[in-house]
Image (cartoon, rainbow, N blue to C red; front, top):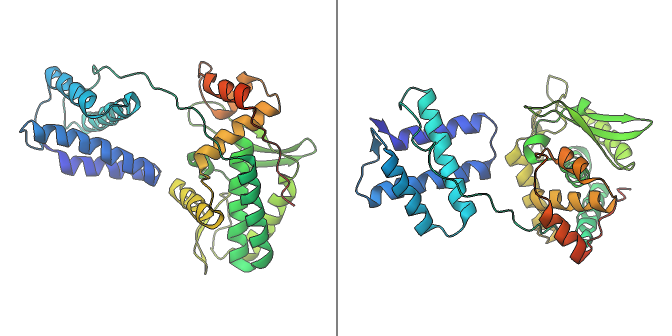
Length: 309
């Protein structure tokens, strides 16, 4: 007999130690609460001994009746599947009853990137702020500008950004590149605009001037308050907070996710082959780019290199 509330908290704690972002954890929590709600409505206690295939089918029907979006249903099924995998690994449950539940195919949402005008607005705001700041406050602005530039130019997810090390920024005669080291494939690099080099060099100088930790910086980003550097890493949630601050100050709707979408259109404007775009995004070769192509062909969005000087 397993206590769902206790084991779900342990499952979420494990995800947190794996570096999952605040929003990801929040979504997993909501998905598991949907399962708890199903059990409660069917007069079942939140103490589970068995969960038969018939009950899994009833849960699938519950999701279909409660949530209209196939993507929402798919996400909740996948979250529960991972939770039961967690229980099986801990020998708390004999097998995963969710393995046989049908999962609706993922529906891709049409990309809705911020306008290039808003990107320039954000860049100008950060540059202007850097001219009025000094010390650690200046360093934090420069860090945020590097984060902004890297997502727009390389399409990296916040989980990838949080793992970047100083040595992953490659600068040579061919221009700057960022090295990406995925867990399940060989490392690869993505080219950056020429203007990134000088900005990165300035950031490194300011970082060393303000570094107050015993160990030399290895990660590209850091966590800090206005008074001191707290740690030599910045979590995915920390990067999300950077964008919350940017949105508040610039009155734009820019997020890491839609900035990544803008990156795809920048590559399309640069006439980068679709196969190369998929490789840089870290998606499968069969990833469907139809919605990007539709927006690109009908709306003709223009995204160019941004001058950071």
